[in-house]
Amino acid sequence: MRKLIVSINVTLNGFMAGPNGNLDWHMPYWNEEMSRVTSAQLSNADTILLGRVTYNAMARYWPVQQVSQYAAREDVAFSDMMNSYEKVVFSKTLTAVSDWSNSRLANRSIALEINELKQQSGKNIIVYGSGKLTEALTRHNLVDEYHIWIHPVVIERGRALFKNLQGRLNIHPYKTKVFDTGVVLMCYSVVR
Image 1 (spheres, rainbow, N blue to C red):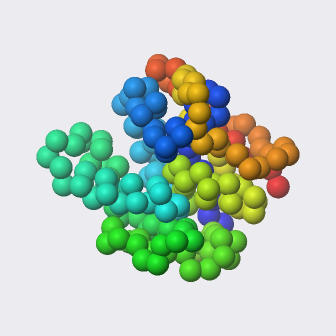
Image 2 (cartoon, rainbow, N blue to C red):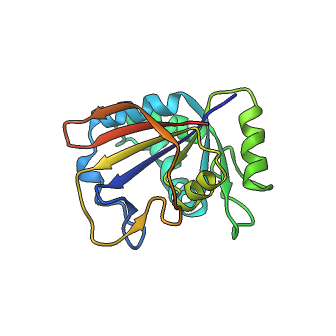
């Protein structure tokens, strides 16, 4: 069975985005080593789940990177994966998705959609960002692993990861990686 992995950047005080969805706080900490780890993570997947906001941002960004003459070589490989993988978008307001290759709207409940995806043959299923989607997946106990990139920065306000969840997550840490920039990647598996 395929695994569903949530990969998300957070501040030291638990925010996944600023109050207006901004992510500028994490860019100064990004380096080539983190890019390699992210590329390896993505190469073990073949399906990307996205919420509406994250989808709209990525659908504008990644197709352009694939053809940009200024993109770094490792970014081109990453954009090839982002553009060629199946992308399933979860939204209550979208009626169609852009022409970003291999994108489709989920047309069933989140549990039915994810359970069917997990039963299909293939590699892992990955979620980047998408706070509301991550919250729904967690609430429905559909996540198999969390890869949380903790950045050494504190912001005053923002969108909290796990904002509306209460209680203990039944997770077990299995890997930690510390990067030179001070970012710590914490990988947790869900215990069932």
